[in-house]
Length: 179
Image (tube, rainbow, N blue to C red; front, side, top):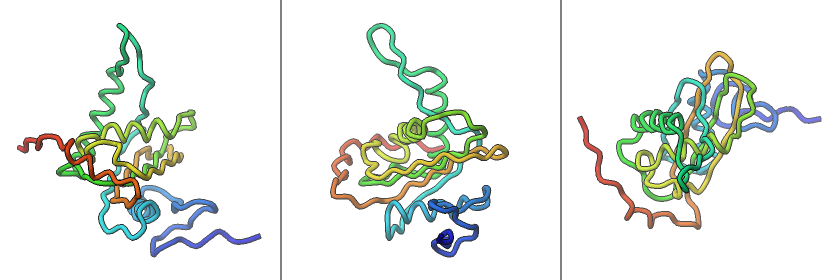
């Protein structure tokens, strides 16, 4: 029987067996972000991370009416809230290939799909953190339990892939107004 691996890098906190992330509370979020950026985009020098406090949002299933699909008001409001949080970290949308990592610290054990939570973040970042979520060529999503401090840790890094997404530059939205 082998011992659990040591923590990669210089960060505090033990690593659980078969996990990239240090165990512990919010005090390890910055270390988690660094480890995730390095794992998804080895050698990365440019990455952003943010922590959104509160119960992580999930992409709702589309609703249908009058022959077309639409989003619920709650889904639109949650995407807007996440978009505003992303705006604090991204002055302009990044172009090129990107890696997206999300750790969703849930307040309870309710069944919720990680891919729907990641899709929520990916859609909310369109035109804010990235031009289009098609730029995301590496993704990592984890659901964790933190009853006392539910939150979402979002990490975005430059990513090298043979599937070049620099052609999306033509989709650049008009610059946002400031002030």
